[in-house]
Each structure stands twice: as structure tokens, then as C-alpha cells.
Image 1 (cartoon, rainbow, N blue to C red):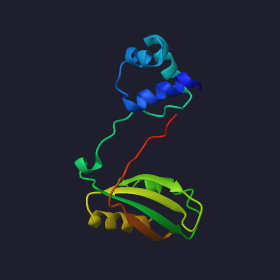
Image 2 (spheres, one colour; image 1 turned 135 degrees about the horizontal axis):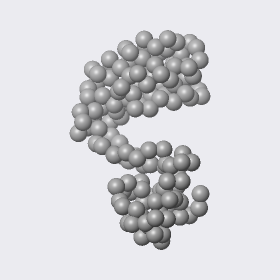
Image 3 (spheres, rainbow, N blue to C red; image 1 turned 30 degrees about the horizontal axis):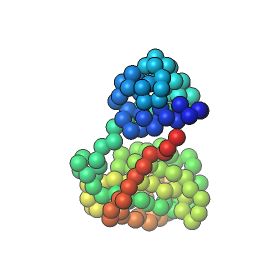
Image 4 (cartoon, rainbow, N blue to C red; image 1 turned 135 degrees about the vertical axis):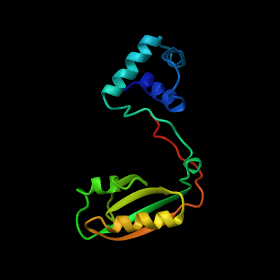
Length: 144
């Protein structure tokens, strides 16, 4: 990746809906050259997907929690079980006292409690520790 690729990624992170002509102008390329570079970034897996950033509270998912999941067994093969719980946005196998860290968004703390019950139903899960977020100062994408 060179500086132009990094600039293209930064522009797409700022506004992924802009036309290739605008992208090209922003980084000093023609529309065709910008399109070709973006296509290659996608093919190489640098750009994994294009999405929309939505306010979770506007969709009724105002409660954010991070949950440490303890286990009695290796959880590396349980990714599908975590993915089957739609309120879980992210799940990570981690080092430390817990085995898995999940990011959960729900409408209420009662719904969060239901997610915790469903986590306990996953084979090998022996405990959870949930931390509810009171305020998010900022979230940022990975910068090129």
C-alpha cells in the first residue's frame, strides 16, 4: 500500500458514497484510476466491506455492554454459537483470565440479562462479567 491507497481509504472512511470522480480529485487521480485502485484494495481484502454507520440508540439498541466470558474449555471452536446471538456485535478470543470478549447492544438491561442467559447456554461457558457503558466518548475506525 502506498500513500495514494491510504488517502483513498481515508476518503472512503469519511464518505463511502462519493463518486469515483470525487475520490480521484481528492487524491490526485482520474476517476478510472481511483476505481481501479479501490477494486484492487477490495480484491486484496484491504477493504472488507462498505457499510453505513447507524446510531444504535435510534434503532432501539441504546444499551452497550462489554462482556467477559469465562469458560471451562477452549472456546475457539464456538464462534458460530456466539454469532447466533444477534445482539452480539463482536466476539473475540482473548488472552487473560477470560476466554472471550463480546460487545453487546440491546434495548434494555433486561434484554442484556437475556443475552447473558443465552451465553450461559453455550457449551463450555462457565461465567460472565458484564460492563455496561454509561457514555461513549468516541469511536473511530482503523486509520490507514
